[in-house]
Amino acid sequence: MHRKSASTHRPEETSGFRSLESFMKKMNVRTVLPALAFVAAFGAMTPAHAADKITIIVGGMEKQIYLPAVLCDRLGFFKEQGLDVDLINSKAGVEAENELLAGAVQGVVGFYDHTVDLQAKGKFIQSIVQFSQAPGEVEMVSTKAEDVKSPADFKGKTLGVTGLGSSTDFLTQYMASRAGLKAGEFTLLPVGAGNTFIAAMKQDAIQAGMTTEPTVGQLIKSNTAKVLVDLRTPESTEKALGGPYPAASFYVQTNWLESHHDEAQKIANALVKTMHWIAGHSAEEIADKMPKDYYVGDKDLYVKGLAGGKAMFTPDGRMPEKGPETVLGVLKGFSRNVQGKDIDLSKTYTTEFVDAAAKTLGSSQ
Image (cartoon, rainbow, N blue to C red; front, side):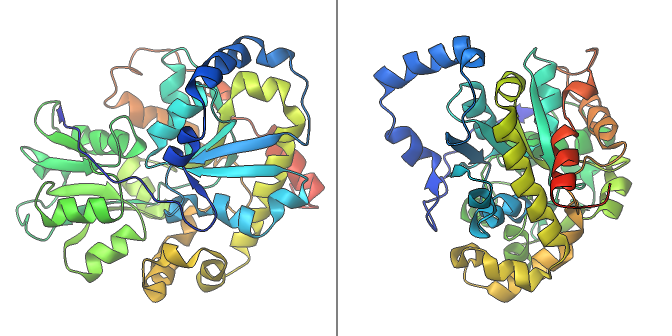
Protein backbone atom coordinates (compact mmCIF):
# COMPACT_ATOMS: atom_id res chain seq x y z
CA MET A 1 0.00 0.00 0.00
CA HIS A 2 1.33 3.42 -0.96
CA ARG A 3 0.58 6.57 1.00
CA LYS A 4 0.50 9.99 -0.55
CA SER A 5 0.14 13.39 1.04
CA ALA A 6 -2.00 16.08 -0.40
CA SER A 7 -2.50 19.73 0.32
CA THR A 8 -6.03 20.20 1.63
CA HIS A 9 -7.91 23.26 2.82
CA ARG A 10 -8.62 23.26 6.52
CA PRO A 11 -12.16 23.84 7.78
CA GLU A 12 -12.78 27.56 8.11
CA GLU A 13 -14.00 29.22 11.27
CA THR A 14 -17.78 29.08 11.27
CA SER A 15 -20.66 29.78 13.57
CA GLY A 16 -18.58 31.00 16.49
CA PHE A 17 -16.33 27.93 16.65
CA ARG A 18 -12.60 28.12 16.07
CA SER A 19 -10.42 26.26 13.64
CA LEU A 20 -7.27 24.49 14.82
CA GLU A 21 -5.15 27.00 12.88
CA SER A 22 -6.75 29.93 14.69
CA PHE A 23 -6.26 28.18 18.02
CA MET A 24 -2.56 27.53 17.41
CA LYS A 25 -1.86 31.01 16.01
CA LYS A 26 -3.09 32.55 19.22
CA MET A 27 -0.68 30.45 21.24
CA ASN A 28 2.79 31.85 21.90
CA VAL A 29 5.04 28.90 21.10
CA ARG A 30 7.91 30.09 23.31
CA THR A 31 5.68 30.24 26.35
CA VAL A 32 3.25 27.45 25.57
CA LEU A 33 5.68 24.61 24.87
CA PRO A 34 7.41 24.87 28.27
CA ALA A 35 3.98 25.15 29.86
CA LEU A 36 2.79 21.99 28.09
CA ALA A 37 5.88 20.16 29.28
CA PHE A 38 5.11 21.29 32.84
CA VAL A 39 1.50 20.17 32.54
CA ALA A 40 2.53 16.77 31.18
CA ALA A 41 4.91 16.26 34.08
CA PHE A 42 2.88 17.74 36.93
CA GLY A 43 -0.71 17.83 35.67
CA ALA A 44 -1.80 15.10 38.06
CA MET A 45 -0.75 17.34 41.02
CA THR A 46 -3.07 20.16 39.92
CA PRO A 47 -6.48 20.10 41.65
CA ALA A 48 -9.57 20.10 39.42
CA HIS A 49 -11.65 23.26 39.24
CA ALA A 50 -15.13 23.22 37.74
CA ALA A 51 -14.62 26.75 36.42
CA ASP A 52 -11.57 25.80 34.35
CA LYS A 53 -11.97 26.24 30.60
CA ILE A 54 -12.30 22.95 28.76
CA THR A 55 -10.94 22.88 25.23
CA ILE A 56 -12.26 20.09 23.02
CA ILE A 57 -11.00 19.47 19.51
CA VAL A 58 -13.34 17.90 16.97
CA GLY A 59 -12.19 16.00 13.89
CA GLY A 60 -14.50 17.93 11.57
CA MET A 61 -17.40 19.72 13.26
CA GLU A 62 -19.33 20.04 10.00
CA LYS A 63 -19.50 16.24 9.67
CA GLN A 64 -22.80 14.73 10.77
CA ILE A 65 -21.00 11.92 12.60
CA TYR A 66 -19.70 14.51 15.10
CA LEU A 67 -22.80 16.68 15.38
CA PRO A 68 -23.52 15.77 19.05
CA ALA A 69 -20.63 18.00 20.17
CA VAL A 70 -21.85 21.08 18.31
CA LEU A 71 -25.49 20.33 19.14
CA CYS A 72 -24.65 20.02 22.84
CA ASP A 73 -23.06 23.46 22.76
CA ARG A 74 -25.94 25.05 20.83
CA LEU A 75 -28.55 23.55 23.15
CA GLY A 76 -26.72 25.12 26.09
CA PHE A 77 -26.08 21.82 27.85
CA PHE A 78 -22.40 22.55 28.56
CA LYS A 79 -23.27 25.87 30.19
CA GLU A 80 -26.08 24.17 32.08
CA GLN A 81 -23.38 22.05 33.75
CA GLY A 82 -21.36 25.16 34.64
CA LEU A 83 -18.75 24.42 31.98
CA ASP A 84 -16.85 26.88 29.82
CA VAL A 85 -16.23 24.72 26.75
CA ASP A 86 -14.27 25.88 23.71
CA LEU A 87 -14.78 23.72 20.61
CA ILE A 88 -11.90 23.69 18.13
CA ASN A 89 -12.30 22.41 14.57
CA SER A 90 -9.72 20.22 12.85
CA LYS A 91 -9.71 18.40 9.53
CA ALA A 92 -9.29 14.82 10.81
CA GLY A 93 -9.39 12.69 13.93
CA VAL A 94 -5.69 11.86 13.76
CA GLU A 95 -4.85 15.58 13.90
CA ALA A 96 -7.12 15.97 16.94
CA GLU A 97 -5.49 12.97 18.59
CA ASN A 98 -2.04 14.54 18.21
CA GLU A 99 -3.20 17.77 19.88
CA LEU A 100 -4.57 15.76 22.80
CA LEU A 101 -1.32 13.86 23.28
CA ALA A 102 0.61 17.14 23.16
CA GLY A 103 -1.51 18.43 26.05
CA ALA A 104 -2.90 21.34 24.00
CA VAL A 105 -6.53 20.28 24.60
CA GLN A 106 -8.40 18.39 27.29
CA GLY A 107 -10.57 16.18 25.09
CA VAL A 108 -11.27 14.97 21.58
CA VAL A 109 -14.40 14.13 19.63
CA GLY A 110 -13.12 11.42 17.34
CA PHE A 111 -13.30 7.71 16.61
CA TYR A 112 -13.00 5.18 19.42
CA ASP A 113 -10.55 3.05 17.39
CA HIS A 114 -7.77 5.53 18.24
CA THR A 115 -7.91 4.35 21.87
CA VAL A 116 -6.97 0.83 20.73
CA ASP A 117 -4.35 1.96 18.24
CA LEU A 118 -2.63 4.19 20.79
CA GLN A 119 -2.61 1.54 23.52
CA ALA A 120 -0.63 -0.65 21.13
CA LYS A 121 1.91 2.20 21.07
CA GLY A 122 2.01 2.44 24.86
CA LYS A 123 -0.23 5.51 25.16
CA PHE A 124 -3.51 5.48 27.05
CA ILE A 125 -6.68 7.37 26.25
CA GLN A 126 -10.27 6.46 27.15
CA SER A 127 -13.69 7.02 25.62
CA ILE A 128 -16.09 8.26 28.29
CA VAL A 129 -19.16 8.92 26.09
CA GLN A 130 -19.93 6.90 22.97
CA PHE A 131 -21.79 8.86 20.28
CA SER A 132 -22.25 6.10 17.73
CA GLN A 133 -22.55 2.35 17.21
CA ALA A 134 -21.72 2.53 13.48
CA PRO A 135 -19.02 4.58 11.70
CA GLY A 136 -21.42 6.73 9.69
CA GLU A 137 -18.85 6.48 6.89
CA VAL A 138 -19.45 5.53 3.28
CA GLU A 139 -16.99 4.19 0.74
CA MET A 140 -17.85 6.13 -2.39
CA VAL A 141 -16.72 5.13 -5.87
CA SER A 142 -16.41 7.52 -8.78
CA THR A 143 -19.02 7.11 -11.49
CA LYS A 144 -16.05 7.11 -13.88
CA ALA A 145 -14.52 4.06 -12.19
CA GLU A 146 -16.89 1.53 -13.71
CA ASP A 147 -14.49 -1.35 -13.01
CA VAL A 148 -14.72 -0.90 -9.21
CA LYS A 149 -17.59 -3.12 -8.05
CA SER A 150 -16.25 -4.09 -4.61
CA PRO A 151 -13.17 -3.57 -2.40
CA ALA A 152 -11.52 -6.43 -4.28
CA ASP A 153 -11.26 -4.00 -7.21
CA PHE A 154 -9.17 -1.49 -5.25
CA LYS A 155 -6.01 -3.01 -6.71
CA GLY A 156 -4.05 -0.33 -8.57
CA LYS A 157 -6.45 2.40 -7.45
CA THR A 158 -5.93 5.56 -5.41
CA LEU A 159 -8.31 5.74 -2.46
CA GLY A 160 -9.25 8.91 -0.60
CA VAL A 161 -9.09 9.14 3.20
CA THR A 162 -9.38 12.16 5.50
CA GLY A 163 -5.82 11.73 6.75
CA LEU A 164 -3.12 9.09 7.05
CA GLY A 165 -3.57 7.31 10.36
CA SER A 166 -7.21 8.39 10.51
CA SER A 167 -10.15 6.08 11.08
CA THR A 168 -11.03 6.30 7.39
CA ASP A 169 -7.50 5.04 6.75
CA PHE A 170 -8.06 2.14 9.19
CA LEU A 171 -11.42 1.14 7.71
CA THR A 172 -10.21 1.39 4.12
CA GLN A 173 -7.19 -0.79 4.82
CA TYR A 174 -9.36 -3.34 6.58
CA MET A 175 -11.84 -3.59 3.70
CA ALA A 176 -9.00 -4.00 1.21
CA SER A 177 -7.29 -6.62 3.37
CA ARG A 178 -10.55 -8.51 3.90
CA ALA A 179 -11.01 -8.55 0.11
CA GLY A 180 -7.61 -10.22 -0.30
CA LEU A 181 -5.45 -7.24 -1.22
CA LYS A 182 -1.99 -6.72 0.19
CA ALA A 183 -0.13 -3.57 1.21
CA GLY A 184 1.33 -1.95 -1.88
CA GLU A 185 -1.49 -2.97 -4.19
CA PHE A 186 -3.39 0.29 -3.66
CA THR A 187 -2.60 3.87 -2.69
CA LEU A 188 -4.08 5.97 0.09
CA LEU A 189 -4.36 9.72 -0.47
CA PRO A 190 -5.38 12.16 2.31
CA VAL A 191 -7.94 14.53 0.80
CA GLY A 192 -9.94 15.69 3.81
CA ALA A 193 -13.69 15.98 3.46
CA GLY A 194 -16.21 18.31 1.89
CA ASN A 195 -15.02 20.36 -1.09
CA THR A 196 -11.50 18.91 -1.13
CA PHE A 197 -12.83 15.35 -1.25
CA ILE A 198 -15.32 16.22 -3.97
CA ALA A 199 -12.65 17.99 -6.03
CA ALA A 200 -10.31 15.00 -5.75
CA MET A 201 -13.06 12.71 -7.01
CA LYS A 202 -14.01 14.99 -9.89
CA GLN A 203 -10.39 15.39 -10.96
CA ASP A 204 -9.81 11.62 -10.81
CA ALA A 205 -7.11 12.09 -8.18
CA ILE A 206 -8.98 9.32 -6.36
CA GLN A 207 -11.17 6.61 -7.84
CA ALA A 208 -12.87 5.78 -4.55
CA GLY A 209 -12.79 7.13 -1.03
CA MET A 210 -14.34 7.13 2.40
CA THR A 211 -16.34 10.12 3.62
CA THR A 212 -19.44 11.11 5.58
CA GLU A 213 -22.58 13.18 5.29
CA PRO A 214 -23.13 15.84 4.06
CA THR A 215 -20.37 15.08 1.50
CA VAL A 216 -22.00 11.76 0.58
CA GLY A 217 -25.26 13.44 -0.41
CA GLN A 218 -23.46 16.07 -2.48
CA LEU A 219 -21.51 13.43 -4.41
CA ILE A 220 -24.65 11.45 -5.19
CA LYS A 221 -26.72 14.49 -6.15
CA SER A 222 -24.05 15.69 -8.61
CA ASN A 223 -23.63 12.16 -10.00
CA THR A 224 -19.94 12.37 -9.16
CA ALA A 225 -19.90 9.14 -7.16
CA LYS A 226 -22.11 6.34 -5.87
CA VAL A 227 -22.19 4.21 -2.74
CA LEU A 228 -19.91 1.17 -2.71
CA VAL A 229 -19.93 0.21 1.01
CA ASP A 230 -22.41 1.81 3.42
CA LEU A 231 -21.44 2.01 7.10
CA ARG A 232 -24.18 4.42 8.20
CA THR A 233 -26.42 1.95 10.06
CA PRO A 234 -25.78 -0.80 12.61
CA GLU A 235 -27.17 -3.40 10.22
CA SER A 236 -24.99 -2.49 7.25
CA THR A 237 -21.99 -2.10 9.54
CA GLU A 238 -22.41 -5.57 11.02
CA LYS A 239 -22.57 -6.99 7.49
CA ALA A 240 -19.38 -5.21 6.41
CA LEU A 241 -17.33 -5.36 9.62
CA GLY A 242 -18.73 -8.34 11.52
CA GLY A 243 -20.40 -6.52 14.40
CA PRO A 244 -21.27 -3.15 15.94
CA TYR A 245 -18.48 -0.63 15.40
CA PRO A 246 -18.36 2.11 18.07
CA ALA A 247 -17.01 5.11 16.22
CA ALA A 248 -17.59 8.77 17.11
CA SER A 249 -16.93 9.31 20.80
CA PHE A 250 -15.59 11.74 23.37
CA TYR A 251 -12.20 10.63 24.66
CA VAL A 252 -9.51 12.00 26.97
CA GLN A 253 -6.09 11.01 28.23
CA THR A 254 -6.30 8.53 31.10
CA ASN A 255 -4.01 10.58 33.34
CA TRP A 256 -6.18 13.69 32.83
CA LEU A 257 -9.27 11.68 33.69
CA GLU A 258 -7.78 10.53 36.97
CA SER A 259 -7.18 14.10 38.14
CA HIS A 260 -10.24 15.82 36.63
CA HIS A 261 -13.10 13.55 37.63
CA ASP A 262 -15.59 16.37 38.30
CA GLU A 263 -15.05 18.06 34.94
CA ALA A 264 -15.27 14.73 33.13
CA GLN A 265 -18.57 13.95 34.83
CA LYS A 266 -20.07 17.32 33.89
CA ILE A 267 -19.00 16.89 30.27
CA ALA A 268 -20.54 13.41 30.27
CA ASN A 269 -23.78 14.77 31.79
CA ALA A 270 -24.07 17.33 28.99
CA LEU A 271 -23.23 14.89 26.19
CA VAL A 272 -25.49 12.10 27.47
CA LYS A 273 -28.37 14.59 27.70
CA THR A 274 -27.61 15.48 24.06
CA MET A 275 -27.77 11.84 22.98
CA HIS A 276 -31.19 11.53 24.64
CA TRP A 277 -32.27 14.73 22.85
CA ILE A 278 -31.16 13.34 19.47
CA ALA A 279 -33.05 10.08 20.09
CA GLY A 280 -36.22 12.01 20.86
CA HIS A 281 -36.18 14.41 17.90
CA SER A 282 -36.46 14.12 14.13
CA ALA A 283 -33.68 14.75 11.64
CA GLU A 284 -35.32 18.02 10.65
CA GLU A 285 -35.58 19.19 14.27
CA ILE A 286 -31.92 18.35 14.81
CA ALA A 287 -30.91 20.14 11.61
CA ASP A 288 -32.77 23.26 12.75
CA LYS A 289 -30.40 23.52 15.70
CA MET A 290 -27.22 23.22 13.65
CA PRO A 291 -25.28 26.11 12.04
CA LYS A 292 -26.84 26.95 8.69
CA ASP A 293 -23.50 26.85 6.88
CA TYR A 294 -23.29 23.14 7.70
CA TYR A 295 -26.12 22.59 5.20
CA VAL A 296 -23.70 23.53 2.38
CA GLY A 297 -26.51 25.41 0.67
CA ASP A 298 -28.98 22.52 0.65
CA LYS A 299 -30.88 21.95 3.90
CA ASP A 300 -33.20 19.33 2.38
CA LEU A 301 -30.19 17.25 1.35
CA TYR A 302 -28.65 17.69 4.80
CA VAL A 303 -31.86 16.51 6.49
CA LYS A 304 -32.16 13.56 4.10
CA GLY A 305 -28.62 12.42 4.91
CA LEU A 306 -29.20 12.81 8.64
CA ALA A 307 -32.45 10.87 8.50
CA GLY A 308 -30.72 8.04 6.68
CA GLY A 309 -27.86 7.85 9.16
CA LYS A 310 -29.52 8.82 12.45
CA ALA A 311 -29.58 5.16 13.54
CA MET A 312 -25.80 5.27 13.93
CA PHE A 313 -26.15 7.32 17.14
CA THR A 314 -26.43 5.64 20.51
CA PRO A 315 -29.56 6.71 22.40
CA ASP A 316 -27.75 7.09 25.71
CA GLY A 317 -23.98 7.45 25.19
CA ARG A 318 -23.25 3.85 26.15
CA MET A 319 -20.65 1.61 24.56
CA PRO A 320 -22.47 -0.99 22.42
CA GLU A 321 -22.08 -4.57 23.61
CA LYS A 322 -19.27 -6.40 21.77
CA GLY A 323 -18.35 -3.15 20.01
CA PRO A 324 -14.77 -2.88 21.34
CA GLU A 325 -14.14 -6.49 20.27
CA THR A 326 -15.25 -5.67 16.72
CA VAL A 327 -12.90 -2.68 16.59
CA LEU A 328 -9.99 -4.76 17.86
CA GLY A 329 -10.75 -7.44 15.28
CA VAL A 330 -10.79 -4.87 12.47
CA LEU A 331 -7.46 -3.36 13.52
CA LYS A 332 -5.85 -6.77 13.91
CA GLY A 333 -7.03 -7.57 10.40
CA PHE A 334 -4.46 -5.24 8.82
CA SER A 335 -2.45 -3.24 11.39
CA ARG A 336 1.05 -4.45 12.14
CA ASN A 337 1.01 -2.00 15.01
CA VAL A 338 -1.83 -3.89 16.72
CA GLN A 339 -1.14 -7.44 15.54
CA GLY A 340 0.57 -9.51 18.22
CA LYS A 341 -0.06 -6.91 20.95
CA ASP A 342 -1.91 -7.68 24.17
CA ILE A 343 -4.65 -5.05 24.17
CA ASP A 344 -6.65 -4.50 27.36
CA LEU A 345 -9.98 -3.23 26.05
CA SER A 346 -11.16 -2.37 29.56
CA LYS A 347 -8.62 0.46 29.54
CA THR A 348 -9.89 1.95 26.28
CA TYR A 349 -13.27 3.08 27.61
CA THR A 350 -15.25 3.49 30.80
CA THR A 351 -18.99 3.45 31.49
CA GLU A 352 -18.59 5.10 34.90
CA PHE A 353 -19.50 8.59 33.73
CA VAL A 354 -22.37 7.57 31.47
CA ASP A 355 -23.84 5.47 34.30
CA ALA A 356 -23.66 8.42 36.69
CA ALA A 357 -25.10 10.75 34.06
CA ALA A 358 -28.06 8.42 33.58
CA LYS A 359 -28.84 8.66 37.28
CA THR A 360 -28.44 12.42 37.26
CA LEU A 361 -30.79 12.75 34.31
CA GLY A 362 -33.29 10.33 35.84
CA SER A 363 -32.79 7.81 33.02
CA SER A 364 -33.37 4.08 33.35
CA GLN A 365 -30.36 1.82 33.53
